[in-house]
Structure formats: structure tokens, C-alpha cells
Length: 306
Ligand code: CP
Ligand code: NVA
Image (cartoon, rainbow, N blue to C red; front, side, top):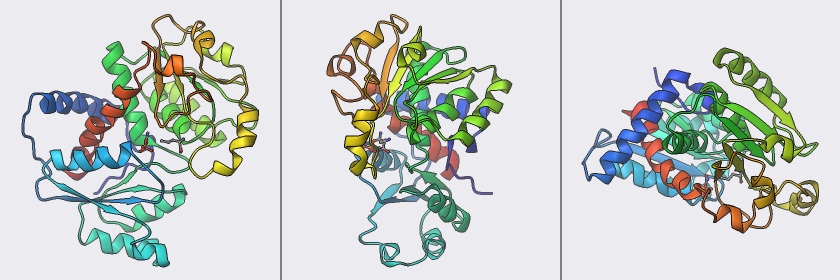
């Protein structure tokens, strides 16, 4: 049966570990110049209804490196943009392609696409989830720290798609998650509830506060993301006011563990959610995160499309 990656929770803890292990192998193989073409002759369709730098380039290059090819499908060109049903699009694309990666607004749209497609569907970001980024982020932490279980992962800012996928990913591998979000910007209650259940099984702790100073205390990783995500541009002014005191700056970083990793999925707004000194400082691993999208997504595509 085909398998999709619509949320991190589509993977078991063991499957996540397998992806991380494989990412490491694929990264080394690529650096050593080893030709590895498990997806030779296969094609990935990439539907983008929102902008992208990292996701588009890393999926396209990743597919090429695995011996296959990727097609960029813009909604402006697809008949879907003119009202063709998602179900018909899914059934049609399934006759040509071996996988679909989609970046869009509603999670329900990705679910509908996956339901009607007979090939794997990979979520390249929705308003609710960003699983590929969260898996690449686990790999980045693993590379820098050597292990994940028992580390404290602090997320400061908007309880958005990034927060949701990170919560799911961290608790699954037994990392403690400490969140600070302003009132009204907390993560989805259902996702938190489910994560608490998983956390019980893996021994992780999951905490939420509106005080960044409390959340960041002794953290091993400090992560933040933009205050206004794609599609929320009109709320930017309102959000800048609501997020006062939530900037990850040098003062806040003093409260974290001295060697804490600074992480951000990018694109970043220096001077808003993070100061330039911190994101461009010695503790920042943001470009390792960006690079690791390539390796982790190759592992995901191998697993789902191989
Ligand atoms: N982090 C991330 O998904 O970046 P893009 O929006 O550039 O793809
Ligand atoms: N939360 C951000 C993530 C971008 C990769 C957004 O959705 O715009």
C-alpha cells in the first residue's frame, strides 16, 4: 500500500529514526561523490500554491540526485487553478507520476489529494504542518548533539505550522518541548493533546507558557519562526504588537544552556522574531538546517517512492 507524509505523525518513532539514519548515509554519499540512483526513471510532481526557495530547490535537486526528475507545477498553469476538482487532479497525476509534493494552504486539501492519489503524497507545507522541515531539523540537532532523547527543545513565537510539526517530531523521539507563545497564538489544542499522549509513551515533557524567559531556561535548542506566516501578511502589524517581548535576542539566549543551538526554518525577519546578532552568531545552525532539507527529503522519497 502507498504511504503518504502529510504530518509527522504519519511516521512511527522507528520510521523517523530510519529517516534520520538514512539522511546521514545519503549526506555522506553525496559528499563522497557516490552515484546513487534508486529512483531512476521516476518522476515527482511538485505543486506550489505558496512561494518557496528551500523546499522547491531541495526537492528538485534531491530527485535529480536520486536518478529521477521533478516537475514544477504552478497553480497558474494547472487546470486545478481553473476549478478542476482536486480528486480528478489526483487521479490524473497518479497515471503519470510516482509521487506528488504539494505546498498549499488548507491541510484538508492535501488530505483530499492523498485520498484520491494512488501514489505517495508529501506535504511541503500547509497552514497547519511542515513535516519535511521538522524531520530535517531533528537530523540537524542529531548531527550537532549526537543524540536526541532527553534534550530540551524550546520554541518561542507563533504556534504555527512549524510549531505543530516540531512538537509532533520532538515528542516522538523523546525530546522535551518547552513552548512560549503569546496569548491567542498558542498551538492547535488537538495537536497539543495528541502530543501529550505520545509524550507519555516516550518519556518527553511538553510545556506551554506565555513567558519566553521561563520557556528558554536551560534549553538545548532555541527555535523560532516568523510572526506572520505566508497567507497572514495582512495581520503583520497586529502580530508585531502581539509578539513584543518574544524576540530571540542575546539577552534571552543567556538564559538557555550556554551551548544551545539556535534554529530557524527560514526565511527569517531579522529584528522581529530573531535578532541579527543571534541568527548570524556562532550558535546558529540555520544553514545546516537548510542544507539538511536536501538529505532528509532524499531519505523520505527513497522510503515512500523507492
Ligand atoms: N523553510 C522552508 O520551507 O523554506 P521555503 O519556504 O523557502 O521552502
Ligand atoms: N511559518 C512559515 C514557515 C515558512 C517555511 C510560513 O508558513 O510562512
